[in-house]
Image 1: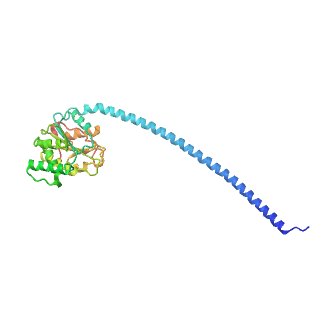
Image 2: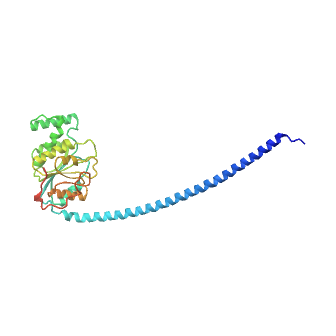
Image 3: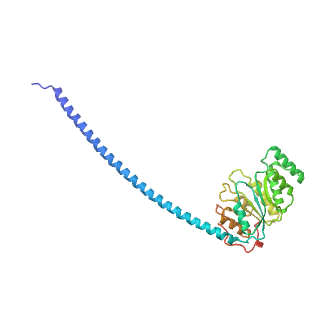
Length: 303
């Protein structure tokens, strides 16, 4: 019987194919087992990390709750102690408040001044810059100023001119018709009585990069100092664009967190004669003065 050579070739080829298929199947089975084990290990590790994060989150929540309770206790303490601490510290002191922005409400500061015994003689809120109205409004304003003061007002210096004259009227009680004009034309809000002022608080800060700190606040500060009236600059802690550096360049005391009880305490201490730059922002010399002054009669201001 003759066996064809092709038979041997096919047989050998079949054997190698069968071996290859077997090896492949075995490899795949081992690979699936290894993959399954790795997948299980990863899942177990993720589950453990998730449990650890849950535990950490629970601990953080408990810590936050404890801190909130502690903060609440401190707030209650402050509310009780603060009025006693500042009572009559500013008795008889007549204050004019000039707010050069209407972006913030300084009610906390006002209440603190009243609790300290001060008299708020007037509150002026500058609602917009004096050169920001329509052409007709600006023309009417410059005509009024030219007629009243007998000078030609440069439009480029309109803010500075009005700010200086307005602060003079607020402090001295003169030129009340300027206050009335600005109020009736929507430039300012004014309550109280002008004149008879012992201390001026200028309240600034802004949430807008384009502000009038140099063209309105600075002329006010310069005029008040010329009138020999002490002045302090304040703003709230959440003011995005601070005016404090501008105020410091005019060599006046400042408080940059007057919306807080600590800032309000610092303000009263400054008004008693503790000069300096206080608050929580960069550039503050300390959080607050180290002690109160002796008496309201000792009110002084760096010039």
